[in-house]
Length: 126
Image 1 (cartoon, helix red, strand yellow):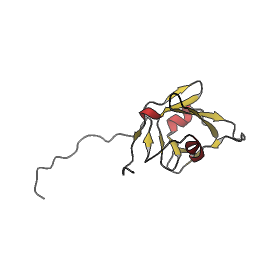
Image 2 (spheres, rainbow, N blue to C red):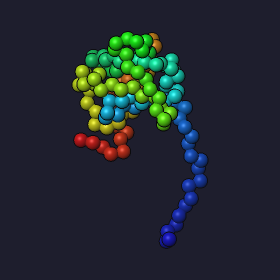
Image 3 (cartoon, rainbow, N blue to C red):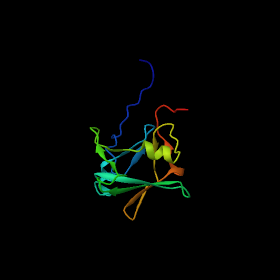
Image 4 (tube, helix red, strand yellow):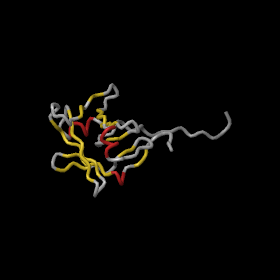
């Protein structure tokens, strides 16, 4: 094997301790443990939309409410919320998986600005 190979000598980063959430093209939000705990370990949430500021809100709710969406844990260790009908109602287009770097929590509501999301898909679509 010709070449001047240099071995990578830095330690790999461990799991992130930052809150994070993604939204995939199937309309599923996926959040990590830190965020799930920060928003109160909800069994269910309600979704909200602010068209003026183009933001999505997610708030812990009673799972028995008709508009509540169940939060389920996946074997990957992340929590998921299915939101296809919500996204369709507000015509929120998805062409991959999006990360929300500027998420905030205000008055017990997780706020996800759509304007600052970015596509983290391995394969960019359409």
